[in-house]
Length: 254
Image 1 (cartoon, rainbow, N blue to C red):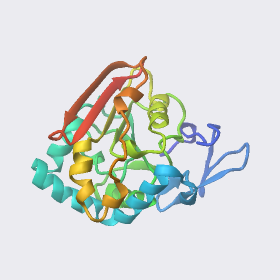
Image 2: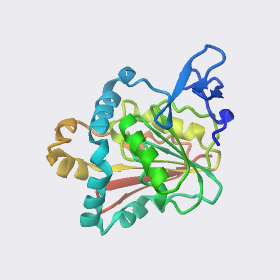
Image 3: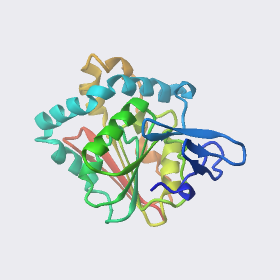
Image 4: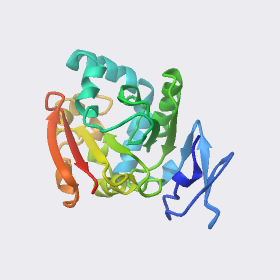
């Protein structure tokens, strides 16, 4: 069961109260409703910059996202399990721990986690979250799902035993803020992981797919994610996985 003490108002980081209709900030009356099985901390019309652009993309492709990915992973990597293991194996996670995935999408990483954990997932796209709600039910998993931006997470400090991100941070409006938020909500000593597409994948594949190529413009620079990891983090490591199509950064919160 979702516990109110886990949550914070992403606008003020004030405490929230859970009600049947959603979460309420008792100080200012701000309400965040349940929608389609997830708690919504974002009105999509309020999204700005790159977040708005890619929210529109993922809402557009949500219904066929998982099937198209499964076919691609089968052809390119011999299957989905083989693909996801190349970055999920970097996680430190044990049974009963609390894990957060930012940009959870349709929840496709959850079945491949090597522990029976308490699952939390956040994404900006309502279309993708609707798919995640259906998927976790089909997989007989339990997960707490939220709509919001990774730059302002609706959780209290030091809440999660494992925090990770797969795909999307390259094109956030503020990737540095998203990294700092991941660190904020992780418990001290937590190993965090960020994985996303390399330029090889973006230019070689996304730039050629008719449905999405307009969202990945030629000359659009990708952030140097390794340089966004604060220098006080421990055990910072960078590697390329999935035939050089993905990078995987891991580091530990002091």
